[in-house]
Length: 353
Ligand code: NAP
Ligand code: ZN
Ligand code: ZN
Image (tube, rainbow, N blue to C red; front, side, top):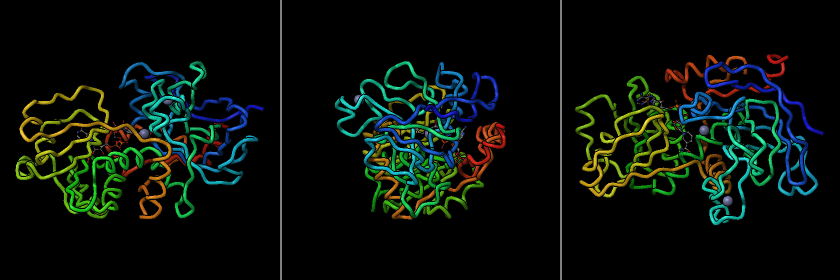
């Protein structure tokens, strides 16, 4: 039987989110049904629902930082049982046969992965609906285990913010002896600081918000660079091996590139709605590299959760009720969150009747 499920959806790019009901599929042989306890609010939710990145699918139920408990499993499910604490991130399926899927890089699936929302299942027809909802049915291959040591609410943001920062930090060599800067201290950035620190790097926060200086230190950063302070930016030229750019809005990439040492890399994970012009000399001068990174694979997401559990890395959250989501989105847009909104899904039953 399908599962009648309460949710919140954006009816269009201009309208506020409102109560919505949908049917989750009955678990197939390899599916698990997850009762969602919490869902993080990623800036990508807002970008997509507001069509910052182009046309989107409506009604849209956002949310790809999903945690909860398994409440039913299909006959062939081997990794999970009822009661398990699990998570779902930005993907719910992929082709599973291409070279990228074979390599565990489902995020680069040649046929296109199925996004948790604003996308289609692999049949190309069935719209996906995300985690701003009571429950979700997902193939076990796209479910990860939340380690026992982690509280579910503070673990939720790791399903996107965690993997999106862990994957490039690891790939581009954050570790002992490396000077790593995390630019933009928001949902992604604050988790990125903790992960880079846990990897053993020397970490600097680059921020437009002077008031975050103290938070940066509390998160484990060794240094803080105010990107609006011209003198400080000049003095920091050529300093970093790696910059993780998590900024959500248009910004000056060249000023950031200038902070890299010879052969240093700036890896872009933030996705502002506009192109970011690159001045050739900003990369040619010191053989710098400009790279990008998109979330991470499923096995790597599990690896990230285990790493975070081992090193005590969690998100700093502000818990909200589902009915407060529109206000939370307004605040997110104004850079007024320390550092991730997480929806307590228990609040949905009451608010949506
Ligand atoms: P967020 O919580 O809103 O954080 C973004 C941070 O960017 C802010 O805290 C702020 O940091 C900085 N910022 C905001 N406006 C700025 C401006 N006008 N100029 C300079 N800095 C500004 O967002 P998030 O959830 O961390 O997401 C960050 C970005 O990553 C979004 O674009 C999101 O879509 C993208 N994303 C990408 C992936 C991927 O796979 N590549 C995955 C998830 C999210 P300061 O106050 O410190 O300056
Ligand atoms: Zn996200
Ligand atoms: Zn594939």
